[in-house]
Image (spheres, rainbow, N blue to C red):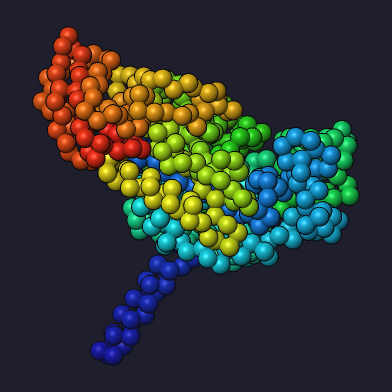
Length: 511
């Protein structure tokens, strides 16, 4: 063999090795599934990872096709098909007819070209959320209406192919991760399935409150009864067995392609068969763990076992310190979760004080905002988020990485019952309402006055304080305070008003 022949021979062998390495038959070994599709196996997850306990605050947003009419609420796509209602949403059917025409001429999918989102800026939104103090964020990935906010290959009704023609979830997640923030994707599409096609008593026009377990009211004259191969996917008129696969595969698509840290489910998850819920959770846990994540699945009511997921209480909170960590999702607005014309918003003080109450009881806050259909987050909401961010930045040592104290606190505020359990998220607190948390190492106790106490006044802490105190001061201004302890009862004197905060003043007790 000549020298040239030897060179050619060696090159051929090398080329063959490269070809084998790139061969489609050669597969990367899949990560071994740690979690089986059983509740017992899934309960072995680290359900309350440290990052979640430290985070305290996240932001999400209801933004979708339902933002276009900007009327009543995000349930517009349901109520536009429900004539004769006198209760919540009852004005929508008539409004739709007057504004857009009867549903025989203008249907929900006709709003999609109007959902332009031209001002959506993932980088700017992620920056806003971080400046607001949030440690995790993400969109409503899919609401009850069946429209996906990611670049779906399974759901033709998605924001990448229609409307904004942008991968909203994907672009935002990329920017959040650049900001070292965790991500959340919320799912509400378990309610999409049309479950009442054969139950005439539950049809629209036959009752003002058509079947509640399906989002779109059924009627043979409506598009909600369509069997068109594409339209039926949007309106949920799908055979039951096919729907459950469609539901699961869309959730898995987000998990596989975008790696959310939290997947969160609205009510009606219990309408999904148990084996599909187990498949969904196992896929999320196994996929996330193989990537080195500490994943969470969040649920409402009793839709998942308590030892598998994190309970979310809508628009409310616990009345006592919980044995487990929990979530509450609350609105920045007074009513609708999505943007509507004339929307009004809560005062920053109300939001912050209720957030502190949640933290004192081992809870985490998920705050909802409402972008307009064109992708603008209006100034009213931005100003509130800025106020929250400034307060948190000034008091961050008393927010992040804190833990519950032996008692959550005391005060005069009257608790109102929440609509979804626990207490309302709009409790009116004042400076006489006291809450507590402590540092992880127990060396600092944080005393929150949910307002601004009178300057140069004495505050006696009711619970007995164990341990040797070396300093009492104000978080943010670092003003040192005069203090004394008698029979384990701590009393300290407040500083001048300028050293405190009108939204909520935090005192630091160092041991």
